Amino acid sequence: MNASEYARRRRELMDLIGADGIAVLPAAGERVRSRDTLFDYRPDSDLFYLTGFAEPESVAVLVPGRRHGEFLMFCRERDRERELWDGSRAGPEGAVAQYAADDAFPLADIDDILPGLLERSERVYYSMGISAEFDQRLLTWINTLNSKRQSSHAPSEIVALDHLLHEMRLFKSRPETGLMRQSARIAMDAHRRAMRACEPGVMEFELEAEFLHEFRRRGAQCAYLPIIAGGSNACTLHYTANDARLEDGDLVLIDAGCEYEMYASDITRTFPVNGKFSEPQAELYNVVLEANKAATAAARSGNHWNDPHDAAVKEITRGLLRLGILEGKLQTLLKDGAYRPFFMHRTGHWLGIDVHDVGDYKVAGQWRVLEPGMVMTIEPGIYIRPETRGVAKQWRGIGIRIEDDVAITRKGPKVLSADLPSDIDGIERLMSVGK
Picture (tube, rainbow, N blue to C red):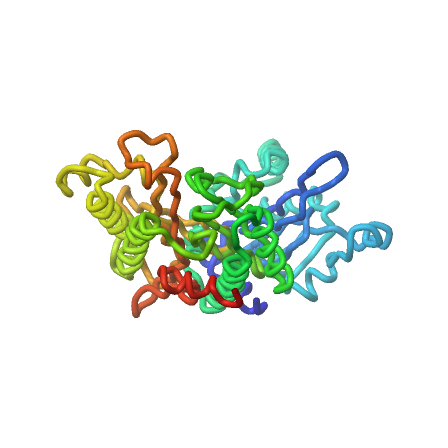
């Protein structure tokens, strides 16, 4: 991401905060996996969005109107011994030279410097509840200033930073959309690898390995734990064991996306283990495919957030009625929510730096209007557990989901994952290559 993009974001946020406000953003902490082993470090999304800075133990501060510079960083100092073990650090000098901070200080000096910055401000914009430790430090600084009222001035309120910053993040710029398009390309190529590698007897984790290989060789990583769910495992929405053998005649549902330069893709395809849909599988699959198409068509500027979901629900209910899985009149079934035992989740979510990205779904209690710059997923599904009563045996144990990444544009929905086949002929043709 170009440095000017981060500068533009900071400027936009500071314009919203105003000259008597201050924004404070601490980095995410490192997390222990077990004993002295850490999880791979993942930067705080908000701090990264504004700075591009990806080190732990850092704090970004925005002070609109400050004479000596509005963007400040507190971070770890250079340390030859620690860098020998853990890798290089930017240090305060690097925060200025590489990340365009106006001023940068060692994190150890924050108790001496930040209270003085708070003192000149009426409002502190901060996200409470993410870090209990930093919450307490901030409140201590403010309480200390309050206890010295004759010689200092404390901010009069703490304002949720999320409200402003997350609304900004909801609307993707052209550079952001470009990164998300590349993230989708990498994920699509990984899905193709898995489809070609799939055959009866393969383990779910073997297909997972295809994703890990493709992601890492392209400079990306998993955006979330991949779901590789063969047979009835696909009826568990967040199945991640990925340790079962794929059986001839079953379907396998794969929900896997990557994170490329901090931007996520989120794609699901369901396909036959042996490369050929059975007639019942194809009939149920096409219901979900039509729901995906209807929901995507409704994901256009001027429609409301819930319109794609309503479109998907209608197609799924109509399809289940046609196959005899539901009985009754369409409108009555829709009113009664008869589809819910088979389609129990929403049709999508915001997508961006986070897989389930930030942004309100409702404004003033009403579903918000879709606008250009938003990016969402479209992911209808049907899940019929093996023990489901009142459903013909041929449908039981089948789970199907088809998920695409969709950008809202002035010209209509743009499917970022459109190059990965989702129709039956396209999937079967792809799986037959080289076999």
